[in-house]
Image (cartoon, rainbow over all chains, first blue to last red; front, side):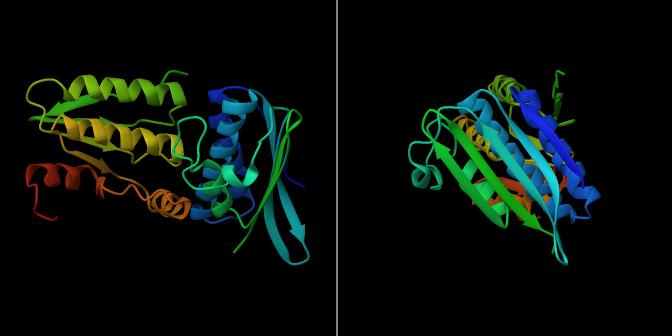
Length: 132
Length: 121
């Protein structure tokens, strides 16, 4: 099964991770728009790692469930964690002076999105996109 | 990997055509370079051409909104040109509608827009 892992430590890794995700999505036969959706979601999630956790990793892998084919994004960091996930998922809420569109935007671009965070332990995100 | 975006002048219009993926520091430098250009005399408009960008995320969007806001204060109209359909769809789905930002299908239409303000297309 196709699987790629990117370490995220700086801005350059954000570009590398989204390029890698786009390649995987293309290889799996996702449409051009879906490739851009996936790459953009990765860009938002990778930036959050750089901004808040300093380092972490993103794994992109092929999914197969019966007839359905898709792609899964696994994001993990050992950063400070998110004190209030509901707030962090709210449009326009940002603690970094951004647009507050990163997490809620990434969620909308994917089909499923699960986020777990423990204060002082880190954050993990599992997001999936199925082929149309 | 340093990405310098060339900023050219045609008549009194500044044209910045992004050449490849920009990382965050590049984006910040690009913004500063643009602002130093449009504060020069005889700056009657700015076109930012995003044709080659395959990903426009919230960070780049915020920068575009910032540039537009500052340019507006200087009385310089800004047109974003060449956004791909996939990028446009993604931005709208993310809830980033680029409201209030003038856009054009390509560089030529962007120039037409600056030359004939008020006239659509």
